[in-house]
Length: 112
Image 1 (cartoon, rainbow, N blue to C red):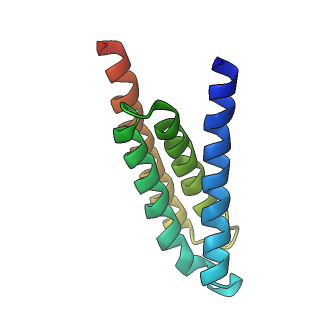
Image 2: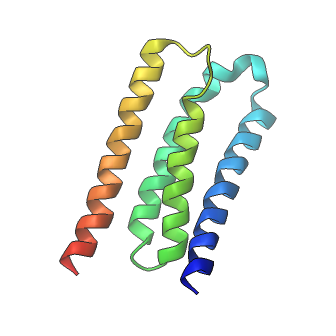
């Protein structure tokens, strides 16, 4: 059962990442990718933060949103032609979200 839950969390995360990728490519054609960077990164951060707060009630769904949000943020930072300043800011934002999520998730487990 634990394996099935873990697999389900990964499936939610992967589906969320692909949903964002296809959504961006649908509404923002490839030449405008740097513009879509400003949409994808905050969207991923929002998924991760929301997942952190709903994780207490809906453990599997929250974990899937957290992983999917972090994966989405990483996707936003992958273009090779992205300006180094934007890449630096994006990595800093991703690290901030990771620290926040880790603090909320793992400290709440330690307290329980």
